Image 1: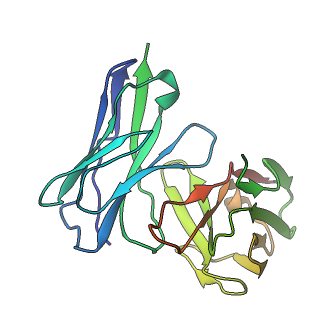
Image 2: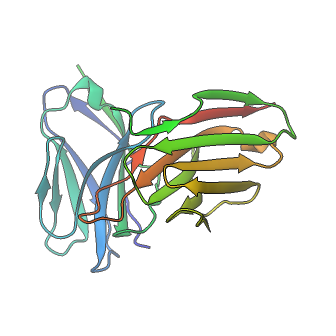
Length: 109
Length: 114
């Protein structure tokens, strides 16, 4: 399984974009990058996933570098409700997910 | 808009009791999973099921068993609860149908074994 590295924590000002980095230098060609978040005392929530191309949905954008060794999750206009632990996971599609420690994001007013 | 429902939010059981944690999903998903989450250890996979009556061990199956008699329901069983099984338990489901979106998790059951 490809291993991911995320910063343990980061702060963001409300209304600003939050850019969450993830390194996955050992990713293989058929592995997807998934992002989830977990708000305190709730189950994790799916955000977005991608293989090679950049992806955007109503929650966030995912930028994957051309060599696929790293990616960035972008929350375009962070709100206080975006305060959560964010997990970057690399997996073959259809296989079970493993969650690491993630990045604790605190959005400040 | 509830999609994965776990039967209890909080549960307190005594050591040695047999404990059943129930999970129901209404999305007709083929795959279901049970995780436990502990501070500093992240989410760890206990068991998963790819289809009805099928089950596979995850990373930490010891002390647990599961049952999947119907597609929508996946039960986690603690045969004889111990204090080291005090934890947050999370159920999730996922479809096999492309484009293979992510897991949907329940809200979790916080189990305390005394």
